[in-house]
Length: 92
Image 1 (cartoon, rainbow, N blue to C red):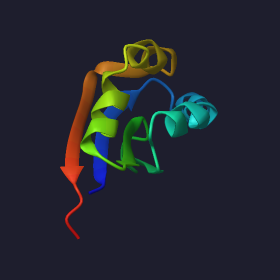
Image 2 (image 1 turned 60 degrees about the horizontal axis):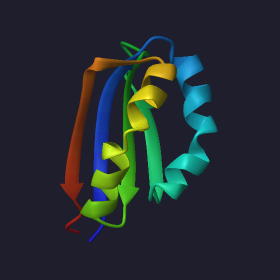
Image 3 (image 1 turned 180 degrees about the horizontal axis):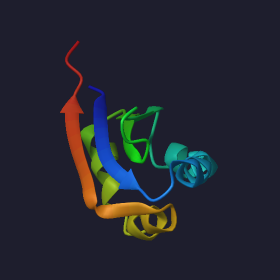
């Protein structure tokens, strides 16, 4: 069963964050991300939602519990106090 994660967070500068995000595609693939989408609010372009799909809950949890994740997020300009992640099982 596939697992979808939905991560909401604020970034300091969307364009800088997006460039950084695009540059870590290999890290995401190596971490089990099999699909992704980036969305943002038209009212607040620095409020970002990232959707990742994983093959399993274990893969998703391992990706987000990687101790190297926090420094990467900080370097990308993510405000960690705004970060909220949901883990959802695909049922259909």
